Amino acid sequence: MEEQLYDQIGGRDAVEAVVSDFYDAVLSDERINHYFADQDMTELRAHQIQFISSVTGGPVDYSGADMREAHSHLDLGEADFRAVAEHLETALRENGVSEANVERILGRVAELKAPVLGQ
Ligand code: HEM
Image (cartoon, rainbow, N blue to C red):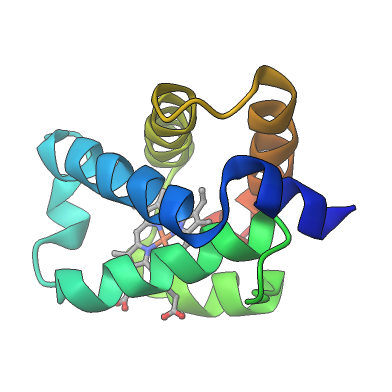
């Protein structure tokens, strides 16, 4: 079932298109782009492809513990999380992902909110 979701979206090419639009949106958003100022964007983009693959049943797996570890030093708040989730939602929709699949993916992302925010 999980692999079906990844394949329905269009596999790796579609995931990369979503990530590309997602990152353009995040990096243009002055509410949150400061968090990414010191990051190697090539690396971060690669990680993000892995993440989206994993929440859609692709080949890579991230646990909540990994997400807690990756974000703990950033001291993120609810508004930061909401902004990122909204950009992801828009990128999924604009790349033709169906409503049902958008909702399933966002549900998976919502499960990671507590670890990402260090709650
Ligand atoms: C929707 C929830 C989120 C997911 C799924 C997510 C996913 C990821 C992943 C997979 C990584 C790479 C981890 C690794 O090194 O393997 C990462 C790193 C990072 N994320 Fe997120 N993230 C989320 C929310 C956020 C938010 C809300 C912000 C800030 C507004 C943020 C900022 C960052 C930064 C700055 C890094 C790099 C940390 C470092 O290497 O110092 N993330 N994220």
